[in-house]
Length: 109
View (cartoon, rainbow, N blue to C red):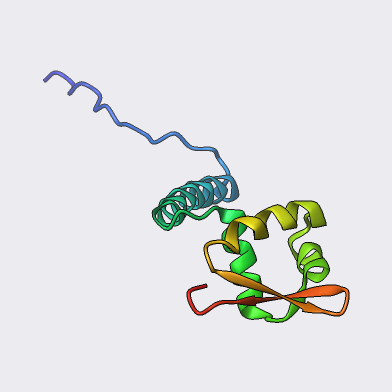
């Protein structure tokens, strides 16, 4: 009686380390979520940086521009540019409070 030919088995490529595999899967999920989020923001014609400004002002109204720039880790000049794009769209308002300006969301913001 002839011996049966050896059966071929296929193995998935393995990193040999469960932590590496978990990290790779997490990166893939993060990439998919980032892409989906970018599409949502694009539909509303808003950048991620602009969204971050709106989110922080919404959570902490009456921040000064200086406080907001520190929270976002951007310069006050960069923040001014972001605000210049949001103000004409009536998403935020700047109210003078002495020498500083306090930021508030509008109802549409």
